[in-house]
Amino acid sequence: MTTPPRHAETPARTHEPGREAGVSSRDHRAVRLWLRLLACSTQIEQHIRTQLRTQFATTLPRFDYLAQLDRHPEGLRMKSLSSHLMVSGGNITGLTDQLVAEGWVERLPDPEDKRAMVVRMTAQGQARFHDMAGEHERWLIELFSGMGARDLAQLHELLGQLRMGMAAQADKPAK
Image (cartoon, rainbow, N blue to C red; front, side, top):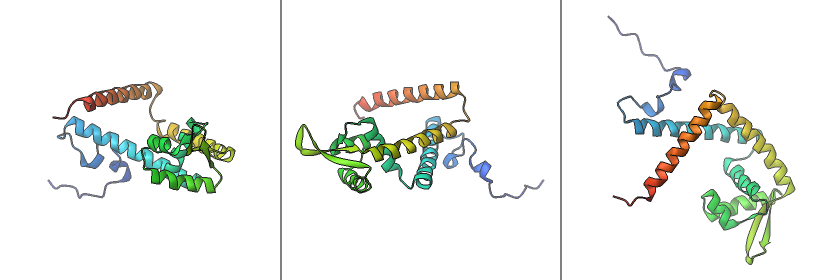
C-alpha cells in the first residue's frame, strides 16, 4: 500500500485546535493549555492591532493609553499612567507628546504637586476615543461570536480561577 503524497496544509488545517506550535497529545496538558492561551491571545491582539491601524490609523499602545485616561477623566500623573500601562516613562512621554500635538490630550499642572503634570483627554480626544472604543468592543464581540453565552461565562470564570491560582503560586517563596 502506498502513502498518499503530502500536500501543503490548507489554511483551515493550520488553524485546527491543538495545532499551536506543533503541540501533540504527548505534551503535558499544562504546556498544551499555555500554548493554546498564548495562541488565542496573540490572534486577538493581532486582529485588534490590524483593525485599529486600518480603520483609525492608530496603534494599540495609543488606544490603551487613551483607555486609561478614559477611566480617569480627572486625569493621571505621567508616573501613574506609566504604571497602569506597565511601560517606561519614556514611552509615556513620547505618546503624550504625539497626542498633545494632535489635540487629543492636554498636560496640566497637578493641583496637589505643582512639580508634577497631569494628563487628561480633551473633548476631541474623548470623541475620537469613544468612536474607537465602540468599534473595539464590536470586534471583540465578533471574535467571540462562535461561543455561546454560557460558554463565554464559564471561560471567564475558569480564567479567573486560573489567575487566582497563579497569584497564589507567585506569593509562595521560590524553591
